[in-house]
Image (cartoon, rainbow, N blue to C red; front, side, top):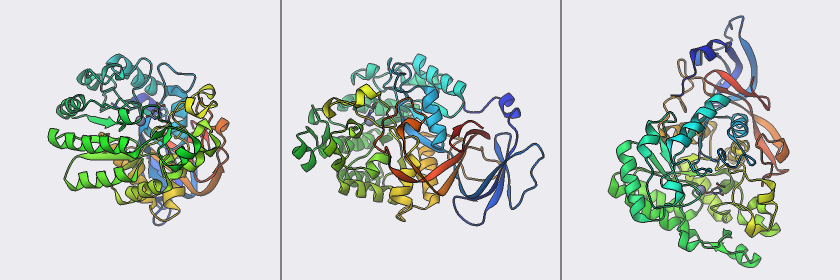
Length: 442
Ligand code: DOR
Ligand code: ZN
């Protein structure tokens, strides 16, 4: 499904990544990329004369990142993002595959929509845009979609989610897990018991109380995580938890995994770095679902990612237009940009403090997500013969985030003016350069 046409590979010259450290380990080596694959690895390779050479002195080579949770807003809200602008942000952020959530307009609840998303992503050609199919028709939580037809379509949908809303009816969720299990596809749950979050705009705690904001209790997330773990156990199915945000969710995941339940989970960069003390300004850029929690939650999430209790990082890149964010906090739409800042936030919160090595970064940003969703050509080892889906990182560089300079169509970000470590200097998709030195394409 994801292989380029032979024509596009032939038109792509060989590339030598000069003097790069694989996973940030050992001595630097040269990596020759040809015909979409890693063709040779060695010290001071003699490159073919037609090869394009990229100087990677001081840089680290990782497998291309895979994002299980992206909102690209196409079809329906292209003023906030579309597949082209979102793909550019993804390539610049080091991603070679992203999963585009189903809460579009129309909802991606049929193969007509999921196939469009796949084809449009391939046409843009910067990152593999895998469509996520909705679990229920129109995200209404009532009637299951034709998951089988979407899985069999051109988009080969392998993950289903009503993200944005929770599949809250336990019987519907049970049937979805059973159906998905038979098809060999994954259900990803936005864990939010809606009866506990009516009107909620912020984490329920001292800060929300002080600021007069309606609170979203941790139990709204944790009760669904616990319930879905039990439903997955009984159905013999797999379930994936989107954007885990509380210390309690971490404990539940630990318990469920210890019972042998097939449960996986992701954490977002913003829940790793930010907390609800930022809400003091009432700035809508900080509104997100689930909400920014307390520092103790962020610390628990970091440890859980380091320990493998949480499997991977997913951005929940969720662009909104200025008119939807620059307004009264309670009216701001939830969601924030994430694709171009994800790696830097992971380095800031986990690599620099010594909780993750660069090899671990490959695990949580590439290998684990590819495995969770069963992508055969992503998250592969950096070895000869493997597909050249690659990310080159400068670990020593620092940069200051400026929303208008990001590739997304929306430019509001909670990281505005923040200085962060690590810069993606090149991304290769099947041997083709999709981003280099901050620019899209070769
Ligand atoms: O903050 C969020 N924004 N959380 C979600 O679950 C959905 C997303 C969106 O689509 O804007
Ligand atoms: Zn969500």
